[in-house]
Image 1: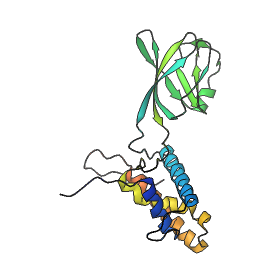
Image 2: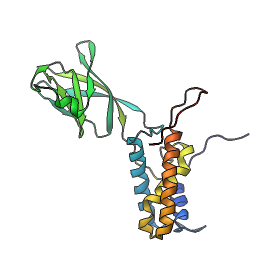
Image 3: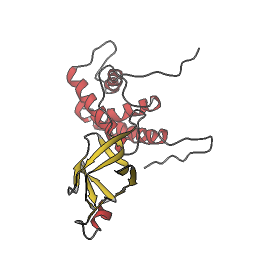
Image 4: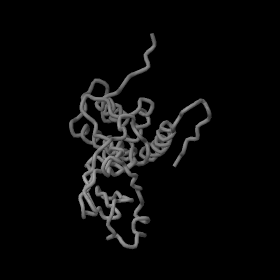
Length: 218
């Protein structure tokens, strides 16, 4: 029977990267300092790509209650919030939509001291800022996209299998200078990493039927 599911632990990805860098031969064990460099680069790349719109399968939308205090225009967000998706305020037994706005739209509000049930919210720097300023205590109902989690020892990273090869190419590029690669080889590695990033973005494109899907190379 054919198999369709497999995974690579972060240690296996580390070894693939180190072999491409010429820092690990067959049968050798990775140096601890080299391993930490690879793990750091891997975690940073996963978080960066996730923030750019490459949504890994395990980083699903989360639900959370937000405490909104009367007279307080701001409240702190949970530490794992990448960005809010929807926001509602529960008033009694009813839920009212709160519009998530940009800095520009929030700054265009003339009187930010108006009070009432909040109608808009700005998320910035880990803080929710409401307008009007809450006139009572409310409970906010939030859905949000979480920040990509750090990798864990002996565990497969939160990365689609089809993206693994391209992700390894990106990590090689990220640490090439620290491993003293010749400049000519670094240029070739950087060119490969640019194509790898495009492949990852194409692989994450939404596919819902058999029609042609446009992959965005940005």
